[in-house]
Image 1 (cartoon, rainbow over the protein chains, first blue to last red):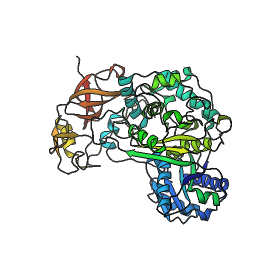
Image 2: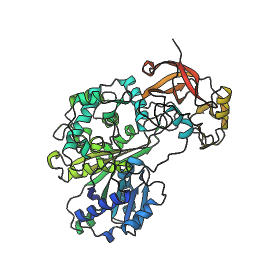
Image 3: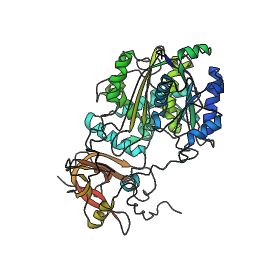
Image 4: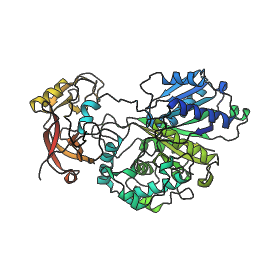
Length: 388
Length: 141
């Protein structure tokens, strides 16, 4: 088979809503219909589908198959991605592999979730015996622990975390899809005065669970051109790791999977941190953004606070950061979360970001984080470099 | 109905993930038993269906001393199931002297007095009249 130049040839994203009263299927349908419309692809041409496991519907193990019925698709390749916030970038990578393998030619990577309307998850496993009794019920307390350790080892300037929240909020204010109630300018005082959730984690360090969806068209460049599609980006490097250092009971929890992904994606693409046009890291919590800045070599390990304070993170700045507000300021559409960062990366490279358009549309770095494990940092890490 | 009223906490259900009978018997005997891989002479926690170190099912349960050091600490301040009447709650990751980490609560200090690096020893948190759960007290230096 000849080498194929695989591309993301379209994206769509719904507005983020809170307690919308709508289902993941409905958001998926909205995102899917919009993707068909913007790309001009006919529904029946879609022969591959990757669906993200949503919190709101995960009690149904057949959600992905139900989705094909809901959308009237008969894919010859179907993937059901259960890596939480890594399912969108991971879905694109898996779709590319399936296309290379000849299992499909036009794939849609579809993520939609509505946990603020319907919470359908029950993690089970060890949690009832070993995590719930001590009061670690969700990601904030796990991240409070992680932050405390980071602060102990490296020091932490809370004003730097405030700056991350504020820089992203500026982008969110310019994002029509951002959740309406988050569209208020932020100040350092707002951040400092926001209530403690799990010390030293404050409310404004955290995302808010919302509802929403997004979709991406993955195919080869020749096919896209044949369909009359002109805007496309190439995922030139992708890497993932799950359960990093999972068999080391005393691993340094400030060391994350991204530390091994960064050299892989920079090596494969030939880019350096200084070349990155926009950085769209998974942002469930501000500290995760700072730790990724370190892991991807924008600064040294442990120097994240100083780097943030010295760097313009705005869309016109040195390192445009989560330029649409990220999940922190657009709202986290459940486990469709990872697609929010990815959609903004593609949007910027397509030159469709309006007032928040970055100058360098030659590339973007997008990441995913999925699942919070027992007493460590996070379960899955993904990194993808897109190039024009 | 007042939220101030602390409801009795439910006893966690044993054996939901793997066979944890030894751990729960330990809580009744006032001992902390953790899963142990005799092939590598290492502990693992939470308990797993196989040894993380060998991939084999050759596992046993052994008593640990219950002494260790605070590795990470937070104060949970948001309500949740089972947290009624417990907030603000000191939650710590303790690195036990046997080389394994465990989540727990510190019982004998105000939450804002707990810090990374403090030495701790095993204590027991009364979940309800029947059940005690392993927790920690900070040992004065």
